[in-house]
Image (cartoon, rainbow, N blue to C red; front, side, top):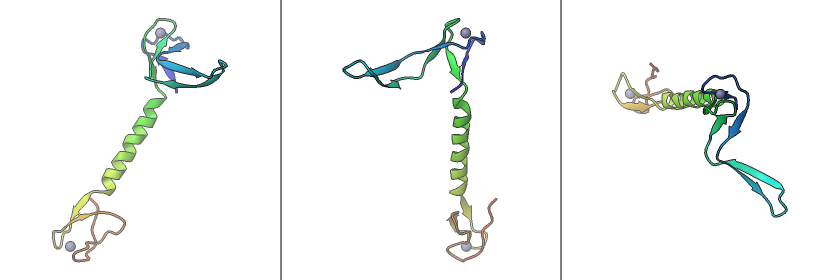
Length: 101
Ligand SMILES: [Zn+2]
Ligand SMILES: [Zn+2]
């Protein structure tokens, strides 16, 4: 996590919103969960942005692209069968090698 003030006021202090702290019967801290991500800048009160989550989201998107690419359909140039590209790159119908565009 890397929080920054959305107003760029330079403050390094933020308050977490919507955080529920769980305690046991003796009052000892057990766990907390964020019911909804939300942080505000303690200095100016502007919402804080979590820049730490952006690269992870971009990575996840890149992985989704890989999956879509691996499952791409290719038309066999010889017999015109639609072939879903997987581990082997041969047409299951006529056995001709397939090229990935
Ligand atoms: Zn601020
Ligand atoms: Zn074929």
